[in-house]
Length: 247
Image (cartoon, rainbow, N blue to C red):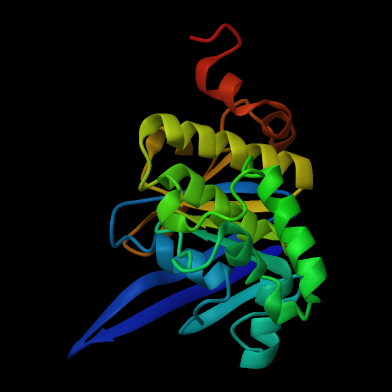
């Protein structure tokens, strides 16, 4: 479980101090699916970086399972990220000279997984996202949707507890966006992940059982009316989008 208490983040730009987050309080239960939405510069990506242990707050605390991510040493934080947190980025962040399988394997290197097991687990992860026939392809030989599937496999191959996604559909067309969201939500249900996603897309935000709206560094939480976390976990993406009769 995540517990954020009074999380503040200040940046200095020349002589100006910018408060990206202003005293954010937030609890994210195990298995939750939370979408963070807000305007550009509102603080949503900064908040995701705090949750992912990629940055430290100026004040307040970010606890994951009782461990304050802002207070632990860099070595322990790196290990915790490697073991517990998978992150998907808008820009895919694949290494262009590596194959899909090799890109996925990179997530297992910090964990000390042996090469043979890395290859096996990477192939399995790619099959789980529908890319079993693309193991030896480099990013330039794949579409944007396929590259994002590689990035998803890379995030999942280490079997994390938490999956974070920063605008994962931002570079995709509408049809591919829906395919990727169906995949992500299916993986969330299947693996019991804690899933936190940043998006500009209101159509995606409306489907989340919990929505955090952030503006000027301040957060407002909304529980989706009539949809419990269990309902959302049972209901496939296509039904959430179109309704039972496809409308």
